[in-house]
Length: 433
Image 1 (cartoon, rainbow, N blue to C red):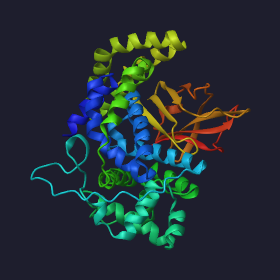
Image 2 (spheres, helix red, strand yellow):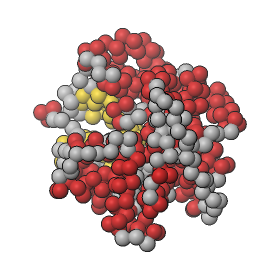
Image 3 (tube, helix red, strand yellow):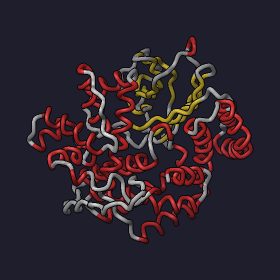
Image 4 (cartoon, one colour):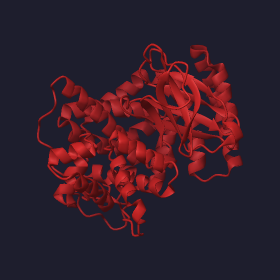
């Protein structure tokens, strides 16, 4: 059941090796199938699978229940890392040329079994991708697994761009477990196609900017985008491939060998997990504050002292704990965008008190440049501070509260002049959903 996965990820965030082993058994076939489809090489796919699950061990607390299911989170991580490896291979002229794995058409479900993937059962929307019309299968696979934009997919398939856009939307609608039945407003229909392309990561720069501006104030598209991301779990499940035993031995050996080095990551994971689960479970705000403060404060305090000894971040740790005691505080996760998809950020945010932002795996800023955080209120980006990163790509920022405690729709990070700018002009590196 879904609660099993929830319990496993909670325990992994706390450093539980046995929970990680069980999580791997449940979710690794889903990730490996996606990787094999992208890389067309079992050896390359298994190498990336090791990296994917090592990242999950280090940052289990990055999963936010409000942003989607665990299955969707694992699929998205596998897809991102697989495409990164494919790009690297292309750069060296080593792109795999083996045949695509055959679709796995699952057997009928036993009565009463949950058809979704992961800890709940052996398949998600079983065989749904294989049942799509061939042209929709081609469009979805090229966009999602081979990182082609809508225009590139159109050129590759020799199909009109409009047909590609419609095929993306119709294909994802077919993969959804509960297809839409309500009538879409005529003036809203184009955003349905943009939502499908956004879920497939195939929007060009201009369309992406247009959709993100619209998404900031549209609950309907927010829900639709989440549904499409979940539909891609069903797509990925048709390629499920059990990993060889050696793959699990390798990742568990890495956990045993290097697990002690994850104290700092587990500290932040504990903070994120405590805040996210409190919201997802529908707890009262006061109960959430009591839960974080009462159950975790002792452990977090100990970890804070350890991190401070290494990084000199005593002030940050105290600020994080103080913010989390306030039931109005939320934890916002920012995902990496091109040209740095591996980057990530997290912001502990309180509209009245401000917040603490930490970024990881960002590339060093060129001379005269720095990263700038933006709070997007409605469709207007407001500057929220400038920061740099160290040699490991890590940086942090104390974020002041906004005037009149405005409601923030999203946060984003761009590369700007070192002194900061009043409005974003540079490349966007991080953005919240």
